[in-house]
Length: 323
Image (cartoon, rainbow, N blue to C red; front, side, top):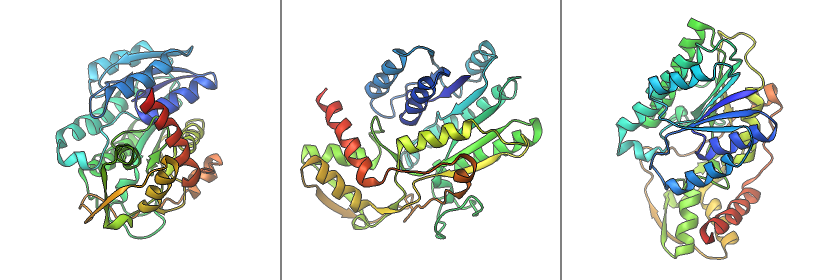
């Protein structure tokens, strides 16, 4: 199967492309290599993909409708799309809101328009986020919960993507599944994420800031579990292409951020210098995924607790830092 992976040099995109190649699929990779975080990390991921048979890379912005349209027309035999390209980061949406609308809303529309013109497309799987649940306090979060109260622009753009996908499924019979990711972490991760920035600060002897004394709770989900859920979903298109799916993909366990810090300290062999601050308005108190729906569909069973995933990340982090 030939699969287009947008955002292939990103954290999740890299791991998905690698897994697709490992099972014998061919991958058409697309990424803009923007400088939201260290481009050297994106290039290092990309170098590893380029070394594998069946991978082709295209340096494109997903919101460039002409370039993406031409790419998809060139690869008219695409059977799957995994659309992960986006402007990530909740807090950065306060700094550069236009980037979120351009990449997340326009970029998603561009992918939808290109996808509906592929005659052999079996399935489009795209990234949404647990952030769409906003200030919801009913735990665990279920796909049937209301998601009309976002607390960040990032969340609002991702909810807009879900609604556009619903319209395109209804209008064009475009088979789609949106995956609401819950706090993904692991090797080759994003430096702007808390676990990565905490590790760097602890090693450097610099202070880290914990909101509400580290009592915020997150459903930390290890990258290998995420990839298994993405591929399992990709392989199972909706039976009715006019009825799109939305699925949570998380670890189905909730941990306080201060437990993350404790595990990082233990794995790094150093104590963190901790400062406390009030929770920012764009951060929610807790996330917790119900994974009943994706488990029923794919057999998805997250198997990596934080106590296992953090040491794996630290082992990679130390190698990357020293390399």
